[in-house]
Amino acid sequence: MRAIRQYELGPAENLLYEEVDDPRPGPGEVRIAVNASGVHLIDTALRAGTPGGTFALPELPMTPGREVAGVVDELGEGVDAGWLGTRVVTHLGMASGGYAELAVREVEAVHALPGTVDFDVAVAMIGTGRTTMGILDVAQLGNDDVVLVMAAAGGIGNLLVQTGRNIGAMVIGAAGGAAKVDQVRQAGASVAVDYRRPDWTEQVREALDGREVCAVLEGVGGDLGRQALELLGPGGRLIMYGWASGAGQATRVTTDDLTGRALTASWALGPAMFRRRDIRGLEEASLAEAAAGRLVPAVQAFPLDDAAAAHAALESRATTGKVVLHP
Image (tube, rainbow, N blue to C red):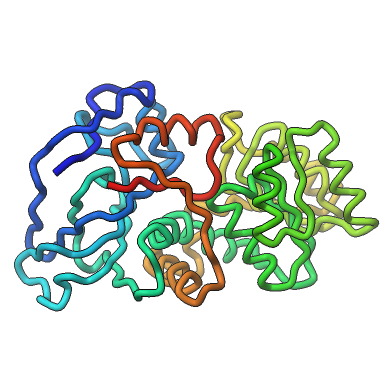
């Protein structure tokens, strides 16, 4: 099969498209002929040599990628014959190997896909979607909320905007650049602003016409995250899940923010995400939203042999929605 291989940590150009041996499924495993592979921001950090959260630096050489969707083409010992030919999606967990034409996974970690869910959508929802479900479990949005979604054109941000719209909340989506702002508006945001503009917070205040932001869903961090926090009204809540701005830190929160303005601040990832549902429960909820048509992830696709370009685009914040690779 063809796959992406990496022999050295460093720039995106270190991702090489090569011929490698086909993997074979072991007992209890299935092999998937991959139609779509997910690309995540953590992939770019690990490729560059920057540990991310619970992810340790990979042992080299390796094939990146942790999200795949396709068709089961081979079964390991003990796997029910009914899985053969089934359309499936899976998250490979802490392992790697997704940027390839074939991938192997334990059958209990695989989800069968209804025909209404295509492979790109499935890849977006098995990783990015499950994280979104966990963030929403922490956020507990209501239809009377005014919600500010940062990085609203990204994979998670796009789904958060749609969810806010679906429950009847007033959603403000902030993104970088006119094209991304247009996409945020199309996703259903009541107000869409460009946070590259120095007056973006004033634009939000003017659009609210006296209302106050109740919740900020924040995955940007740095100065932009701090500006978003300042838009919260008394008693508002900040739900953080990353720092995609490249600032290297989550939004700074002080005790004065919490005591002086009665704010609450939550980190949505990790233990907080699993208080209500386990990982498989989050995956099932995410895929159900897609199957019902309530959430439609934005997807930007690259050929598998152009994985380096996909990484470079993601790192430069030139992408929208979920980035996927097509073998």
